[in-house]
Length: 233
Image (cartoon, rainbow, N blue to C red):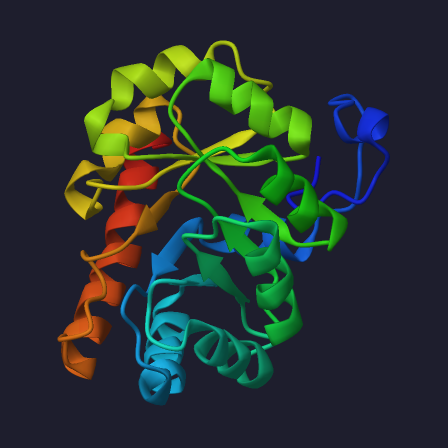
């Protein structure tokens, strides 16, 4: 199952079928961390993007409530096309999906479960990580075409909630906790079944210097690798 499925609805939900991995899947397999660049100024997009890519991140989102987000996404997609996957967070409408696609973004991240937004992203061949909190929302997102989910806000529910959800979700559907989960909490979430994480203020804030961002991005990648090794010694 691909993160940006283009199959028919029946094929999309056939978890027994095998398909070639998508760009999104390859990027997240390499390093399953999504850098959330909320508040990014477009004049810093390339320098900040380079720091995250050099640290090992392969997926970056610019939330649409940032200053001039489409321009930042366009810059990242144009200059670093072969190094990662770039797109938007806090996407709330079909119109915004189309605007992100037109800017060159190929990733849609939402805070909620909106089947129309998910379906539009899938139709445009984009990776989509819809926000969810309950089993009902999870299956609504999957039925709309999502193959990966964003548990949000993760800190409100905890690892035990994720463990219970994973017992009923299709094994092929990956879940990325976001919100209140930082490097120090990665191990317990991985044990509960997390497939990766979205990281925001732990790694980026508009007032961070480039040195701050570099240090935090490097520490986040190191923390993930360490936590992953503890889970699979």
